[in-house]
Amino acid sequence: MSSEPSAPGASPRAPRPGAQKLSGSVTKKGDRGAKDKPATALPPLGEDELRNPEEYQCCGVLETDFAELCTRSGYTDFPKVVTRPRPHQTTPSTSTTEKSSQEERRLSGSNSINGLDSKYAFFRPTIQVELEQDDNKLVKEIHIRGWKVDDRMLTVFSKCLPSLSQLQAINLWKVGLTDKTLATFVALLSQCSSTLRKLSLEGNPLREQSYHKLMGLDSTITHLSLRNNDIDDRGAQLLGQALSTLHSCNRNLVSLNLAFNHIGDKGAGFIADGLRLNRSLLWLSLAHNCIRDEGALRLAEVLRPFELKPAEVVERRRLLLEKGTQERSPSSSRHGDSKMDREKSQLVGISSSLAVDKQEKVQPTKTPKSPGKKKEKSAEVVKKEEKSGSSQSPIQGTPKKEDIAKSSKGKVNIPEQKINKGKGTKTGSKEKRSTLLESELVVEAMETVNPLLEPVEHRDGKVFMPGNKVLLYLNLLRNEITEVGLEGFLTAVQFQVQLSKTKTLSKGPSGLLWLSLAKNCFDPQCPTHTMIQELMLPRDPVKSKFREEEAAAFPT
Image 1 (cartoon, rainbow, N blue to C red):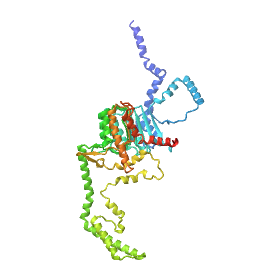
Image 2 (image 1 turned 180 degrees about the vertical axis):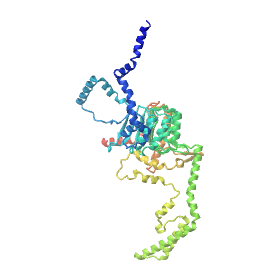
Image 3 (image 1 turned 180 degrees about the horizontal axis):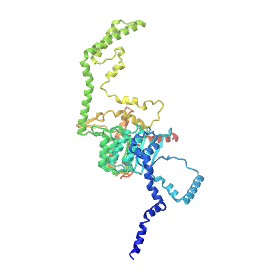
Image 4 (image 1 turned 90 degrees about the vertical axis):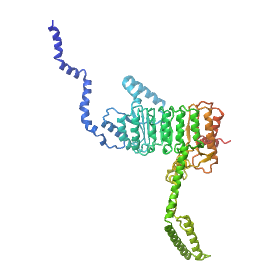
């Protein structure tokens, strides 16, 4: 009896190796092939390349560079680079759609796996790109949605994105960035092309809320969108400090979108503090937040004359003292070399008078004057130059170009220089420039002057600044503002409207052009809101233009 069970036990042991080979070759052929592929295929293709992925030289074509770098970095499955579908595409005819739908039904019925594959192809991780119209290989915009960008993928991006010479915008939505990877991403942005101006990081909450790193002083981003990031008052404080502080200010950011977050009254106060000394931000959206009357009043306070804080008054005095010493320093150096200046001016006066005498001798005149009077006049001009300390040419009292450059030392004329260098100087017949572009030129010119050096008003021993007149667009849709907060905005709008009417110069910022306070905790037909809308209607460039066109089309 004991030998019978031992035989069955011994019989499977003997053929076990053979049985495994047979089962592996027949029944588990797919599994064995899958196990053998990495061992045979990957080492000869990628071992040397995985060690040296940095040796690859990017060619500037994102599809090629991204695929090659992912392969060298060890990725076996990575997102594809596809062209982003255009929003306005021609819709096919009804007959074509019916045929295509019938074809899709036939294919889905014959092969259900392929049908599911094509149905859910939209949800596959991809890198959608928008290409330049002139050159289909140049990428101008990148969209990444719904898949995690980790450290390894950021390493790949850090090698292929800087080679895109025409990259203008990066749009990230739910990419799983952390505070650590965000710092790596910020370093990556500094390596990208100077054409990169727009950044959208949405649906990506961070524990430390370090979004302010995207608004550094050396950042070239002009349009930043941070929607749906669960930003609260603590994050708003960091963003407000990134807009401006007493000693620093962001000079590049033009638009900031903070909609769909959790910013309350304190956070709105921090944003308002950032707007006190910021003179570059034109567009701000705080829609769909938790701002009430206290935060609304803080925002409205910045748009009209506000009182300077003690620290701001001290900083203003320091800047004025510094500016005064800079203006006096060239004159002091002139006094040190007064003898040489006088000798030079006298020599210039004598030579110029001789030149005038020669010209008058050559050119006959009806009423010749005695040379003595001419010499007396030239001597008088020289004396005036000695008194004024300037090195102007005495001929007709007009200064030379070199003398203008010397005399302009110590004076701040940077805004005019920036405007001449900008693209907006060649106006000619191009009168259809948008209001926003004109405002950007004005802001760029005014940004060289510290806001604390703007003209102020002294009242009852206090110093008042004229307020932020650079912000053109403010969106406070769907918050918790009542009529109390509306009163603050009404006062601010009334001040800006009155200022624009009494302003003699047409150039320069004039305040808000668009203000949205709808869907808040007040009656839309209340008198305060109605008055704000009536005051803002002529200032809105879009609505006012539409009214002019309507009046021209239907004259009364």
